[in-house]
Image 1: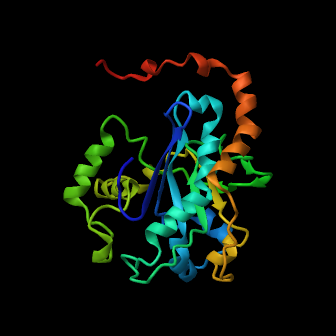
Image 2 (image 1 turned 180 degrees about the vertical axis):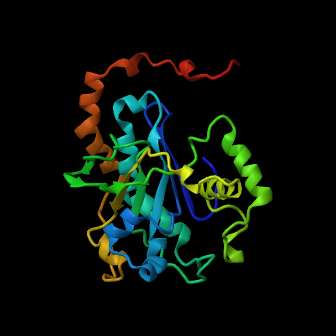
Image 3 (image 1 turned 60 degrees about the vertical axis):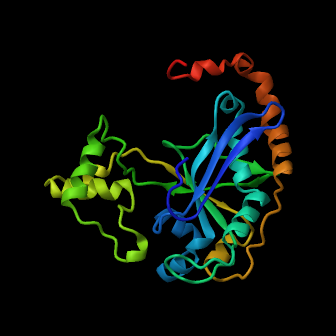
Amino acid sequence: MSAGYGRRLRYLVVDEHNDKLVGLLGLGDPVFALAARDAWVGWGRDTRRRNLRHVMEAFVLGAVPPYNDLLCGKLVALLATSNEVREAFRAKYAGRPGSISGRPFTGELAALTTASALGRSSIYNRLTYRGDPAFVSVGFSAGSGEFHFADGTYDEMLAFAEHHCARRTKKASWGTGWRNRREAARAALGALGLSRELVYHGVQRELFVAPLGTEAAAFLRGESLDVDHHDRPAGAVYEWFRDRWLTRRAADVTRYRGFDPESLRLWGR
């Protein structure tokens, strides 16, 4: 996973029985404006600017073969909401001033956001911990991006934008690069005399919020001083996943038993 910019937490989920990789989890800073998330919280612009730092985005989340056949993507998603992740976030960032705001930070993590790969999600929908919803569907994206500029087209657009387009960054402390790939694509399209709306490919992603406490939304609105965090130890999360999904799935879908890791090799030794 890329080191990226801003705050990052990166995890490998490992099967202690055989020391094999189960899945990946990467958390990073969320985008500033996300209509579906902001409506769920009930944010105004000023409150969002103050409290967005209490939210992280799961930019990588999933299981690898053969664990994906055993629905272990759900396990990785539940582990993202665990006590251990919250505590690691606090240990790493509490007391550190923001690079842009300069304000000290309590280290409270109130919610996670993420999105499906394409369309409706089979991982997050109806995902619960002890009967309580772990992720809440808050809507769908507008269907924009750059993946449809394939076969090197985006790379050429980026190179063009680097030489012919001005970035929209307004503060030196924000850095000098493009804020995201979509911004670079829109800039190149406009400079080439093409419609910037070509970034809309129409493939929507389902958007989710994982509140990490019963008062998460109220805390993010500034109406509560306490998130009232859920108590989800990683060990208990695994036990719930095992009893709720894993045991039955392992009995019904047995192709994992014959999994050959060499089948994933892209090139020879």
